[in-house]
Image (cartoon, rainbow, N blue to C red; front, side, top):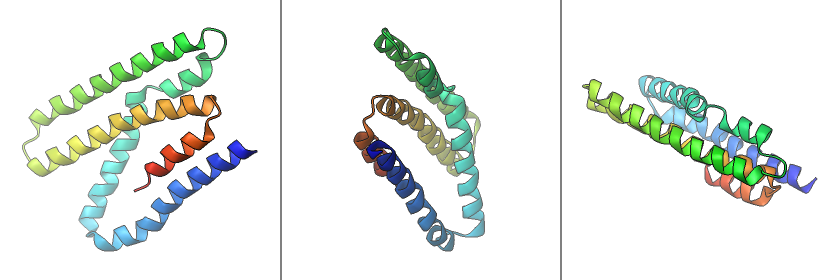
Length: 144
C-alpha cells in the first residue's frame, strides 16, 4: 500500500503541477507560440514512443526470473543504442532546415525525446525493484 500511495502521489503531483501551469503559460504566450509549443509537445510524445521502441514494456515482460540482470543489461544497451541513433537522426535532419528558429525547436524536441527514453527505462526498473521512493523523487524532479 505504501508503494501504491507513493506512486500515486508522485504521478498526481507531477501531472497536477503541469495542469496548474497550463493556464499561466497560455496567458503568457501568443496563439501562434502556443500552437508551436503544442506541436513540439506532440512531436516529443510521438518521438519518445518511437525512439524507445517499447523497451520498457520489454523490460516488464522479459526481465524477470533467474537471469534477469543479464536481460536488463542487454535491454539497457539497446536503449542506449536507440538513443544514439535517435540523436544522430535528429541532428542529421537539421542540415536540411534553413530557418534557424525551426532548427532550434527541432533540436530541442529531439533532445527531449531521447532524454525521455533515458529516463523512462531506469524508472521502470526501479518500479520493478519496488523502490517507490526513488521513483517518486525522479518523477517530481521532472516537474517543470
